[in-house]
Amino acid sequence: MARRTIEVESECWAVYLSGRVNSYSRDQLAVVFELGSGENAIKRVCRFRPTGKGGAAAALQALSDASLRDMLQASQPAWTSPELNYDRSTRPA
Image 1 (cartoon, rainbow, N blue to C red):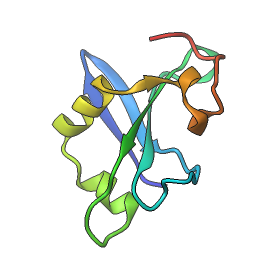
Image 2 (image 1 turned 180 degrees about the vertical axis):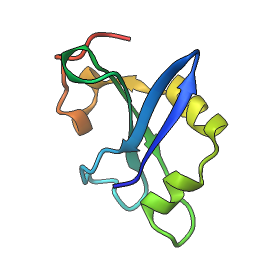
Image 3 (image 1 turned 30 degrees about the horizontal axis):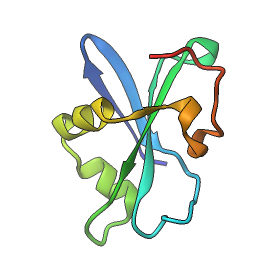
């Protein structure tokens, strides 16, 4: 699975595809942003529509850090996302 990191306001966020297939899998995928790990992690999700023929992982790798920061800004918390099983165990952002 493709995994990247970006720095936003001196914090390092891990960025990766959720891996969950939903009814929109042909049109869009879920990108997970994770700050920290374990019980104290903050997880957020944003929908992403890949372009090109290289596949979803290649499309994620091709995104600029600025694009990923914009996606993080537009993301939703884990507890509102079916891709993360409406996870309420993570602390709110």
